[in-house]
Image 1: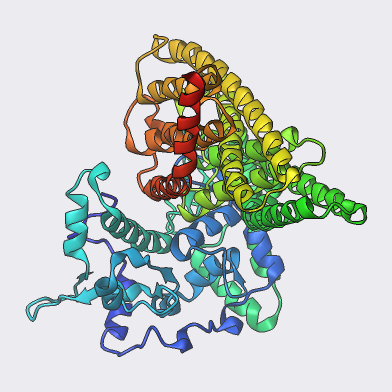
Image 2: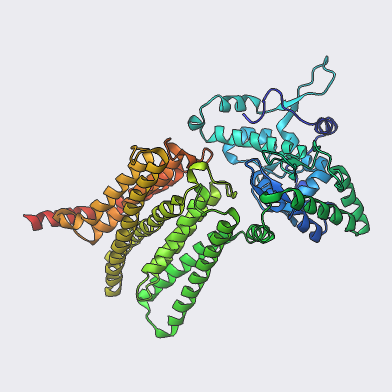
Amino acid sequence: MIMSINKLNIKKHIILIFFCFFFINFNYGNSNFKNLDKKRFYLEPSHTKKFGTILVQDSNGRIKPMNTVALELLRKISKTDHIQNIDANNWLLSFYKNDIYWFIYPFIKVNKKLGPKLLELFKVNEDGYTCFINFYKNVTKYSDKKKKYELIFKKELKEAFSKNPFERNDFDKEIVDLFRTINMISNILKGKYIKIFPVPNNENMAWEPWINPKSNLENILPFKEYLESLSYSKKTNNWDKPNQILDNIISFQKKNGLSLIPSNKKVKLEILYNKLNINTFLMYSYIYLGIIILLYSFFRIFNKKKKINFINYILYILLYIFFLYHTFGLFIRWYVSSHAPWSNEYESIIFISWCTLFSGLLLSKNKNLFVPGVSCITSSILLFIAYFNLINPEITNLTPVLKSYWLIIHVAIIISSYGFLIVSSFLGLLVLIFLFLNKKIRKKRLEFIIFELTIINELSMIIGLFFLTIGTFLGAIWANESWGTYWNWDPKETWALITIMVYVFILHMRFIPLFKGIYIFNFFSFLSLLSIVMTYFGVNYYLSGLHSYAKGENVNILYIFYILFIIIIIIIILSFNDLLDHFIKKKKINN
């Protein structure tokens, strides 16, 4: 547990804040608290920008700019990159300058999974936000000399922590996450997230926080005086003093940070990466563009006028622009992290999304936009999974087992195979939809597209199976180097083998008379997606093994299985007659 439940170590001034505000009846769901006092908190952008360049050492030893730290904290607490026009840098500074206000301002996002009873207890407003002091109650006894407060969801928290992490349900996970968020806010005040001073001649290369550092720092003003200088500069509109303080800190870091200090280019690129928020932009861009492409392609089945052929080129140009932008984001992350950007769950999903769109563009034939359209929507779905599951997007240091050149070779090949196989599955779904429509709308052009998409589907499956097989063999070689054996029947290895066998069977079904035909191939092609979902998500998050470094305790992906299961059931129901006719015809032919 991060922090003792019974003995929450809260700073004295926080207790004073509770004392001042506990007996005041605030309506935290009131619209007055939605409108932030912008003039009060808004600081000079040039100064907050410089503040964002200050380097910080996180708990894992990674050195990163303050802008990254501020964004990570704000995203975890408020699930957003900014609060109205206050960006992350400005927010973090204002949190230290006006902590009392932020304790009563509803900026903490609360998940609805906690249920109406707790949401009402926390006084969560209609937007899903509440404030810090709503999580505590006064438990001071008459004999107590000091005010005492405790969490109002103490009972639920104890029950959640008493369970094994893998046995916790959604409610338990949300309770634990909420506690960590509250603990995080307390740690912000204690300065645990602004370790900015390298300690000279320190064997562990540990850095000290700006608040209450143990060492004497020459020419560096205390944090309290820095905050006072901000207030003075805001009144006089003269930011020379706080800028000078930050310049002194930057000089101190360069002098004492030695080899830990990243280059200025790397720091600027990381801040640019934070600002662009590439993956969130592409998440929405892909889905809109993919829907437009599919609707346009379907319209082209009934209208082949040459006058609108130029739209094909425009859509392809947009696809390649987004694809290059996605590639640009991956390269920035690779350069900033100094390792291949597919080392954890967030990065691997982003890379699978990239591979999916790449495979769609590679397999597009005769200006057939159905394939890139499907891959575009699929890429967006993957980005949505990464975003709405709140998978940690932080750039992290590599775990020891991943510090190998095999990370680039083995993982890249395996993930590339997922891109082709996912496209194959969704093409199978699209063909099934077209087969259903073809019964209602008899059109030769539609029949030709069904035949063409089936060929592309098979080609995508062959390429994906090839990469998956090669990647599994290379993984065995890496396993021998890391663990001393080629095969351990680890869940990841086992399901990779099962997936290979599933796709081998589907590709060879045409040699079985009963399973031969366009309809049955595409049906099983879509059904095979379950093996990919299990191999990647199911094993990583719900089965323990030698690949447990990718496990995400707080990621709930069960709904993916539910959605797929529902879609498959619907398809089976709608196509039951077709499946029945298929097998009856094949039996007659065989007889």
